[in-house]
Amino acid sequence: MSKIKIHNTPLGDGGMISTEEAKKRIAENSIQLNSCIVPLDKAAGLILIKDIYAPINIPAFPQSGMDGYAIAFTSRGKPIVMAGEQAAGSNLHSNVKPGTAIRIFTGAVVPDGADTVVIQEKSKVIDGLLKIEDDQLKQGDNVRMPGSEIAKDALALPAGTKLSPAAIGFLAGMGIAMVEVIPFPRVSIIVTGNELQNPGTSPEHGKVYESNSFALLAALKQIYINDVPVYQSADDVDTLTRILNEALSKSDMVLMTGGVSVGDYDFTVKVSENCGVQKIFHKIRQKPGKPVFFGKKENVLFFGLPGNPASVLTCFYEYVIMALEKLTAQKIQLKIKQATILSSKNRQASHIS
Image (tube, rainbow, N blue to C red; front, side, top):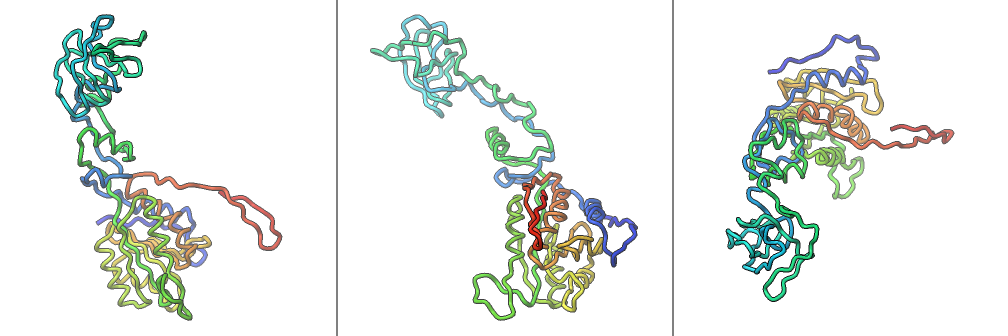
């Protein structure tokens, strides 16, 4: 069980803390997740926990870099007889004799005895003889030697590398199928409110369409966090307690929206106490999103977010993202744009970024 860290910072404004203090407490209470081994096709966006060394030479054999003709360079300037064909993935010709050539294609094995590939655009075959039309041809041209991309036992990717599509392709090209990484957290979402109804249903008087789970799911998917369960609950302490206990048992982070203020039907604080969540702070000097709640049960982080959709995303990008960065040991890059705010009174513009 991890230690809860809370500074004894003087609280003013009815117990509210500053945004800086809130971020400090989140950072101090968010612990990097334990590493795990995952299939390569599930590793996109994750951080490597250990150095990876090349298990083989890449390429593993002399490989043609172009479509053309494989020859011994010493045969240049002499009659060269065509002696067959070699496609990628085949090894019909294991040896090229002096004075002969093999038609070869990109990626194919360059046979023993050949050390140069003449590209097809600078050569012709007339009556079974290869005519070379490349005055600049050099020995070794268009042949990828074993280990020229990466040599066996060389460092392929260091620990701390974020696995981009290119990095994953690079590892797959070396035959690597599993990697040890810091995983993405298991996140659960709980939406609360008697007034909520699901999109796609006929509007009911006094109800509003639930949108917060859709916004949070979309935001999480943008940072590779998928398969997020969503729980819905009316404003009922017993129901919420049961749902929160279940979510806490299956998650590294729980996001609950609604019920975090001080109204008669705002039960987030009470329910979190029922479930053993230790409060780290409740209420921040900001708008929107003032009543946001942050707590922890062992290593599971709990955010009680306001029900207002603007407040939910504001708090997600300001606070939840930084907790996710700590859990996953990576910087989550957000796009920052400059916008213009127009005053409703005098239409004067100011700029924010």
